[in-house]
Image (cartoon, rainbow, N blue to C red; front, side, top):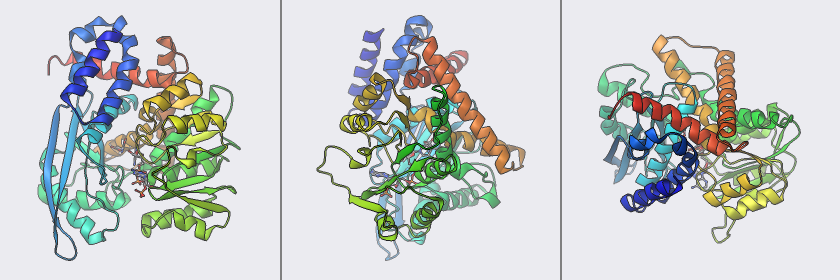
Length: 453
Ligand code: NDP
Ligand code: 2IT
C-alpha cells in the first residue's frame, strides 16, 4: 500500500507543479492513510483519495480596486471549494501577499479533515487574495473587500459555502465583506462567520482558535496526569490565534514568554500578563503596529528582529515545556524542532495551519512528545464557526458559557477520537495518524454513500 500512496503523491506533484505546500499536506495525509487502505481496499477501488485531492471546484478571479490616491490595483482572488461530502463548503479567507493557488489548496485540503473532526456538518474550503492589508487605510480595505465580494458572492451562500477569517481577515474585513454580500443579494443570512455580535456573530468566536489550541494541549497533558499550570510556553504570531492562546494560558496559570510578527519577536522573561496582553491587543487590533513596540513599553522584554539569513527561528530556542506556533505555515523547520526538543519542550499544540515542516514533525513523532497537529489542535475556530451557523439558523444567540462549554467539549472529543484512532491503528500517541485517519474515514464514508459525485 505504501507503493500505492507514493504513486498517488508522484501524480499529485506532476499534475500540480509549483505547489509545494499542497504536496506537503497531501504527503502527510497519505503517509497516515497507508494504514487504513490496507484494511479497507474498497476506498482504493472507489478512488476516494484521487477524488479527495482534486478540488470539487476552484474559482480564481480578478479584483480591481482603487487606493486613496486614486491609483488602480489589480489583485487575484480565489476560492477553493475542496469537498462538500459532509456539509456545505466551509473555511476561512486569507489576505496576505504570499497567497497563491498552492497555499490555498493546502489550506482547503487540511480544512476537509479538520472540519470532519469537529463533529459538525461542514465540508472544506479556503480562499483569499494576495492583497496585503498592512499599511492600507480602512477605506482602502473596505474598497478591496467590496471588490472581492462583488465576484465571490455568486459562488457562496449560507447552504453552499460559508467563508470566515484567517490571516489578514479579522472583524473589520468580515464586516465589509458581509455588508457587500447583503447588498448584492438583498438578503440577511449567515453566509459568513466571525460576524459582529450585534449582527449575527457568536460570542467566543474570536477567542475560539486560541482557546481550543490550549484546551487540546491540556487534554494531551491529561494523558500523562499533568496540566498546564506553571508551564513555560513559547507562542509565535501576535494576531487573533496568538492573542487568545495567551489569554487562556494566563487563566490556566502558565507563563507565556514570546510573541512575534513578520518583523521579529519579543522574549519576556517575566511572562506576558493580562495587562501586557491588553497592550498587545490594542497595538495589533486597533493601532495595527509592530510587536517591536512591546519591548519599548515593557523593559522585561527583549526584541530580536527577524533575520532571513538564519537557518532557524531564535524564538524556538528558549527553555520551555510547551510551544504554540500561531503564525503561519512551515515556521518550525528541522533545526527549530531540534532546538525545541533540546530546550525541553514536550508539548506542541499547533494553532497555525501546518506550521511544522515534515522533517520537524518526524522529529516530534520520533521523540514521542505530545504533538497536536493543526488540523486537530486548531479546529476550535471552525467548530465555533459551526456553532455560529447553528445559532444563525435558529435565529437565537447562546451565552458565553454555553458556547465555551460546547467548544471545550468539542476539543475534548477531537482529542479523544484522535487518541483512540491512533491506538486502533497501532501507533499509540501519534495524533497525526489519529487526526488524518479519523477525518478521512468520516469524509470517505460519506463519499461512498453518495456515489460517484
Ligand atoms: P492574524 O492575521 O490575526 O495574525 C497572523 C500573525 O502571524 C501576525 O502576527 C503575522 O505577522 C504573523 N504572520 C503571518 N504570516 C507570516 C509570515 N509569512 N511570516 C511571519 N509571520 C507571519 O491571523 P490568525 O491569528 O487568524 O492566524 C494565524 C494562524 O492560525 C494561521 O496559520 C491561520 O491559518 C491559523 N488559523 C486561524 C484560525 C482563525 O480562526 N483565525 C483558525 C485556525 C487556524 P504580520 O502581522 O507581521 O504579518
Ligand atoms: O483555518 C481555519 O480553520 C480558519 N481559518 C477558520 C475557518 C472558519 O470557517 O471558521
